[in-house]
Amino acid sequence: MANFDQELDASGLNCPLPILRAKKTLGGMEGGQVLRIVATDPGSVKDFEAFAKQTGNELMESGEEGGKFVFLIKKA
Amino acid sequence: MSDQKRLAIIATKGTLDWAYPPFILASTAAALGYEVQIFWTFYGLQCMKKDMNLQVTSIGNPGMPMPMPMPVLLQALPGMQAMMTAMMKQKMKSKGVASLEDLRELCIEADVKNIACQMTVDLFDMAPGDFIDGLEFGGAATFFEFAGDADIVLYI
Image (cartoon, rainbow over all chains, first blue to last red; front, side, top):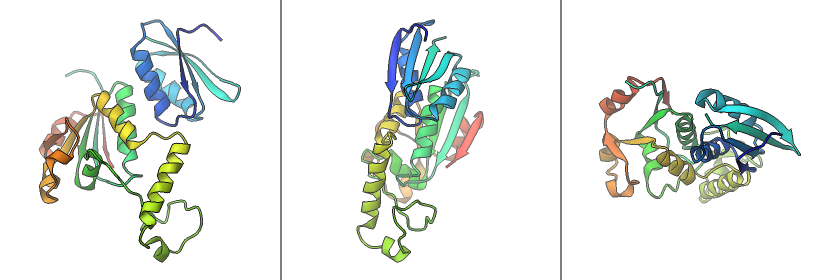
């Protein structure tokens, strides 16, 4: 997996918390920086796609690692 | 007018379960860049009390999953509502579902605008001091001022 600048552990959190935490974390980052998010909510897979599409931030990667969902989002 | 999308919600319900949809949708929409306004009317106003203390009941709600089958008359016994509320809160916590207080705080942080229905406040003699800070008061026309230009309008 590619490099990242910040990491957010949203494990154990349910909808809509992973998205809200990601939004907040991205808010404190610079454009072009990459946020790695780890989540356990199966709904987050589709939600982060939708989040990226609507906010203009790029979903660089979306996958599974050790039973958890991992996302890389580049801030627009 | 800005090209920011707008979500307008009318929230009418004051139970622990039904308080979730307006808070979840409002906070998520705000995170997606929407400008959001919620008009709290009738029982929905309970969600704007400083001390929310919302309850849940299975009475009149045959769709609620129960840990065991239970005749309706038993569900109506004193203490059952408090027990169901405690069980629901416990379940939500164990599943990582945010508390209503947390979701409300996230909405406020994200500049979701909350409007209280003035008529309801008068009707039920509600004390303005019981509500959270920042709550505005207005009527149907106030709602339409925002909802008229909204992309999405929900009645919950």
